[in-house]
Length: 376
Image 1 (cartoon, rainbow, N blue to C red):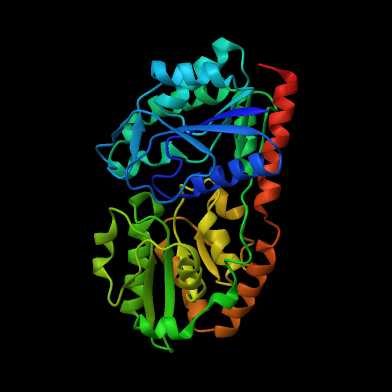
Image 2 (tube, rainbow, N blue to C red):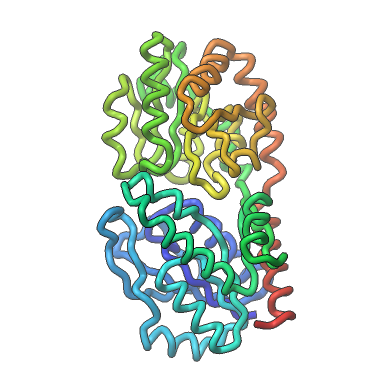
């Protein structure tokens, strides 16, 4: 099969969504024998090399979140490229202008459309004082996912929501995977911790991900500030970069690692003692799975994405999303008990072994085959 894949960000900025997309393209081309052509905005300084053939599309810098670009639609040149490629399926991964126009192109040409849900965009608006736009955004999302032949989402709960929205069963799970050779407890490095100024008797509490408001930055800072007020020996460890970096200035002794990749990333994650993730806007939570595979106990907001990965009190802790006191209590249980940290971390490691990139990508290929047989 020939797959035309459209994404708002395929490789210019690293994030969980495009990690899954690149893994998918590699699987489809190397193991399934498909031909994939990717259409996405590009920059002169991409975060990583793209997997497969990437066709640049016209885009502009977003005014509020300048690290991202907005694709402007299908130019005549892109339409000619599509006509020549003659895809069997059009896969749209972002409900933006580009993917909406690609969706329309496919519908008019009688080509099946597969959409994948990666981001709960409607939940971002309140963080940027744009909550008044939510009804408009939600109406667009309903239309976008209903117009597709099939929709993929990373958790059963989101699939159920989409089936309800569509009033049919043409939605299925596209989970995520983990590289168990990369993220592993053996990557823990005490010498590295010491080099960052983390004392042996300090508990390193990890914030892992882009430093943006919708990831729960404010709650993280409030929780760590309360722990420091109680004179708990905690060190905030930040792995990631982003525009909300200054929010962490209120905390003492912050260790800022910035954006890391490869073995450096795996070492930093495994060298933490606890990960705190108060985000409620994830569709899956790749960083949670990566911490679990590293044997690091996770304290998370009790959101659908986290519930799909964590069994409360067994391989992590779930807290009411904005209750600082609940996060503090869960963290204190782990801070005072190294044995509990080891027990929860070991259980998390075992749970993470259920996730494989090949299995996740294989579920997408299966959906493609079903959609191709059914037609548009």
